[in-house]
Image (cartoon, rainbow, N blue to C red; front, top):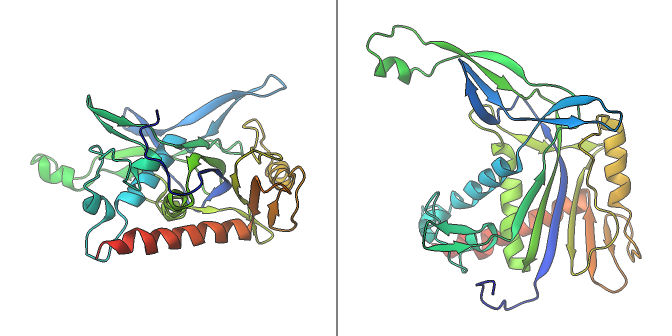
Amino acid sequence: MSGLPQATSQRYHFDIYAVLEGSQELYFGHEVMINVNMVETVKLILPSGEHIEKCYCSPTKRRGVERRSLLWAPCPNGKMLGENLDCHIPNTCTKPACPICSVYGGLIAGKQTLIGRLTHAGGVAIQRLLPEEKQRAMHPAAIVNDPNANSPVPFKRQYNEPGLLYPVYNHCLSITEQEFTAVAYAFLDSLPRTGAGNPKGAIIFEMNGEPLLVVDKYLAPHGERPVLSPAETSVEVAVQCFQSRARAVNGGGGHGEHITTGNGNFERWIGKAAHRRLQDGADSFVDNILKNYR
């Protein structure tokens, strides 16, 4: 048994496919070497046999930022949503009725687990541009805590360079339209908060004014999934591949930015239509969840 109550409406699968662009240098913490904060990278072997290394926007870290966007969502009563729900990190409530835990899952160590129905994937940068080290000064608080210190101790931190493109994917398993609104809100709200420390922020990459974004809602999968190979290093090829796969829906009964199959088991929104679909979901989450706490 799933442990979830019976839904009052039809459940569907939902997918979000997007290519994000770092609008400035970004730090995704991994480990600390001597005076250097390292970022996370991945190593690949290309079909040619060449070994390469790429920057990485970890799905686990994206998931954490999205969850915090929901926990810290502002409510009319002056509290944040997590406070109203008594749901926090690491003390999640794990209640099936919680609009956060019901989708993202929850854990009370040794007592209760609620399996999440949202998984995150992707994150391997397209371009072959390795992180760069930048010198930073230690936080001034360190001086206060050390009476013998009279100046900040310099250290270095790695950063993913601006303009890197990260294909990312969110996959929802058997959730209702209302539950998807939390996913839509978290996805959009987390974009300017992506990354650790400062600076933060990513945007949905656009080509000729068209966002590289796809939203699927379905009972049965159709067409091609706009997932990019982590071995791809050409932005031009990656964009063409994403756009062509986005429009390759088997038996599609629609056209343009909204495609449906004839049997009604699959819908796809592309580009600006997909962005509107997420914005509509985010608005619904505010109106039906956040505004309930007055």
